[in-house]
Length: 105
Image (cartoon, rainbow, N blue to C red):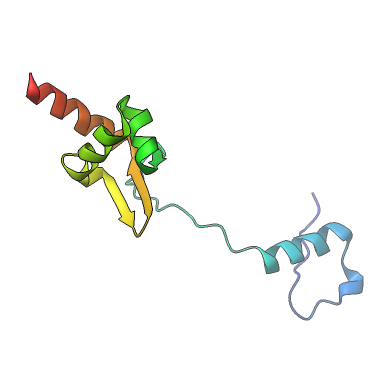
């Protein structure tokens, strides 16, 4: 196994192979990858989001006016709104919807 060549700011470009040069460019242009903390507190499942009143209506199978009413009442914890942008945590919204429907009966 070949020892890895140390490439630093004083290494002449002419002495780099194409692969080494590509790696230098990649390291210089791309931001470093964020490492997840090793504490085990990271959420194993990625969050799902729906967008707008239409997204809420499709997710819950209701009309847009009903989705608007839900957004303003029991779905508030799942909804983030900045100006006209509306983002809803789909999993939280479904859980809140199930709790609400269970409480109405």
